[in-house]
Length: 131
Image (tube, rainbow, N blue to C red; front, top):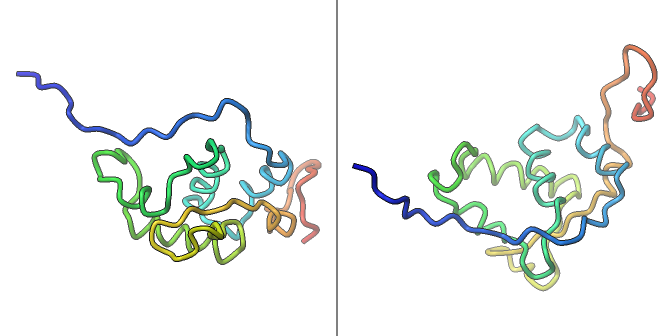
């Protein structure tokens, strides 16, 4: 017997305009070897852009149930990755919600300028860091 799926998944609106981030900094951030793959995924999600005031809070993202997250990592893994992004300066609390719980995070791709990149072994790449 089939029962209707009564699980409601939070829906954040898809922005109607692309994010205003610098594409080169975004590319560097996505290749920053100081970040785990998990942290890069969270950064990509938050960088994708949300309508101002519609951004999910950290608490909302962390509180998604396993059914809602489908194949996503657990809460502790998510928290650790957000901490990683905050420690490098990619995420900072929105000044209006800096109390911690339920805070919205502001994405800053400036730390990507100092990204640790994988050295190019073959050919030329514009994203080498000289090491």
